[in-house]
Length: 548
Image (cartoon, rainbow, N blue to C red; front, top):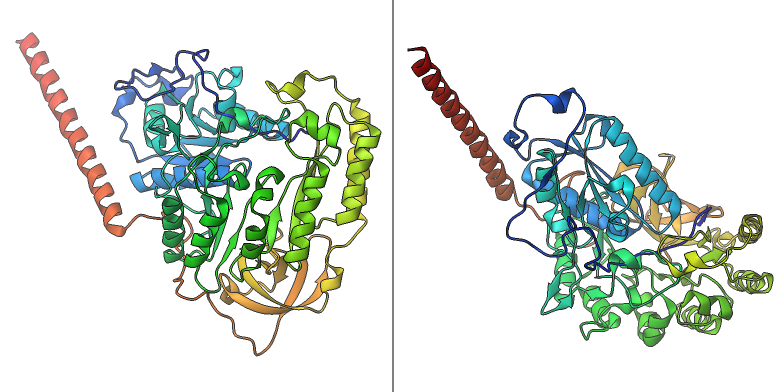
């Protein structure tokens, strides 16, 4: 898989200081005095008190940009809202409120986010923004007056949505801390609505230990904060009990996990392997070279385990040591090659994905040629190619830029190199076991993954979804394999895993919880009616006295 964009590969952090605006909250306050917002339009001009709305009765549209961590955050926010009674809808036009969860890694993603805010305002929708953009750029003009849910405050989305629907603007930032130490974030046992009921995304840590000069994500996600292993394992167990057959571990840097709490990544992974049912799978997320180097032998053993995909995403960004030094990546080309070579030697067939940045300000033609040679040597099946684009507030944004035409030429050159080889040709005719979890973009096939997390297209038969199937590969493409079912082979669901939740169903919420929530809303509505009658009766009494 290749992704080519015209923007910089950036990241984010969470440095909240006293220099921010007064309405940005970096800690909990006992009393909130929201600032009223004025809306134009018939719906907002009515002579009513906005506080009279009944919370939990409105429709909410949720849109997400960015990484799997962001997607997990959106699933949690949607789950909390749905558990309270809000209706999560796919049609933005019918929604009362838009919850927009942003990504600041690349400029186009932020541009789309900005345009969506503009559209929501034109349609006179209530707006709540979340994610790395408002966290990293709280003073951005186009977000002024909007309510914000900080990246570590997603467990308070109900408060923000309720106040926003009343016409107030609330901004909740700040970090989760215990004994002065940053935590991973909101609790992992919150209700959530999985985008795919068969896949659970678990954030094992947030933030990172690096200070990459091009990275904007650091400004939002901040320093490393790891979740305790017990909480992560408990979330995985719950997910399998709810019909999930595949878990994805996500973070800004998987390899850095545990450095802040005295736990190692292999310790966590072995505990997770123990609770994965036979036939289910675990996919590891992105890890930078410096920290995975510490655990290579154990990581190799884990990637060989039958319940773990032999797949790892290790972004190199550049093969030039001088460029890597200017990026402050804290490794050299030899370190990356050592990681790749060790895994290829000790994990047969391992699939290593990587990222490249073309046109970093200090990259010369000779530097770029080193990157080209790295691609020639390893012929990565998954390569994410990005043009450098300066992100505001990063050190690289102040560096003299390479002419845009040169950046485009380099991007085109490495893209052509990537397209020139075919990584799956040798797999033609293989018999493979595939776990089916998704639908192809063209809706013509179901999508499964083999042991190496290669994308395998299989017939679109309902009986296959969420199942392990045996296929014979009859066609290979640049980004996929196609397989026919092998006759006589059993189609089976992973052992002890029940049927998945229905699409849109809230995870972690028992039926009794839903009844109690709805009952609470009913009593709230009744109390509002009684109060209204009392007010009318009081006004009637006053008018009668005046008349007589």
